[in-house]
Amino acid sequence: MSVHVADIDEQYKVLFSLINNLNYSLKKGKTAGELRLDLLKTLSYAVLHFRSEENLMRMFDYPDTDDLMTEHAKFVRRLKDCLYQSYGTQGCQARDLIDFMKTWMMDHEWKLDMMYADHVTVRKRIQTEHGLEVGNKGKCSDS
Image 1: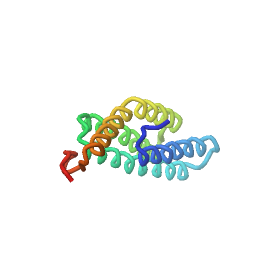
Image 2: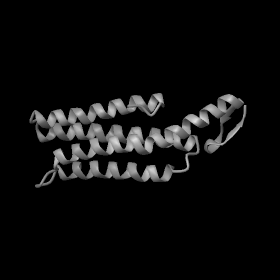
Image 3: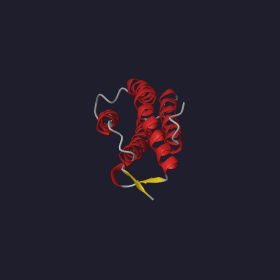
Image 4: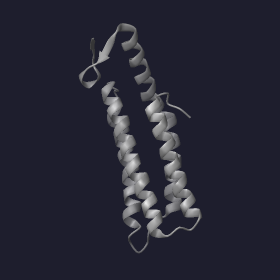
């Protein structure tokens, strides 16, 4: 699966790998502390990935940036909630969280990210064809 933006595609691979590692840890019966660490790694990387996407969207003046940022915030909130719950008496439903993350990532990448990636690709092509470079807030200007 690819959004045709090399850096973002590489980040997706890492994020899916972290989610799969969390799933593996759960299946292998790792301790709550080990699961928390895996969840924290996944959360930290998701935040990094989302910042990269949001910066790219702003750079290329993507019109739906705010909507995507809202979706990113929901994902992060869900992971943070589970992390906090894992310290409580009821704990976190890790299986439900993993299912949520996998479904969310697939839906997000196939639907929302493909739209902004298409926008970025078109803007890059226009810039290349016309000898323009990205200026402030994604506005094109002469070199």
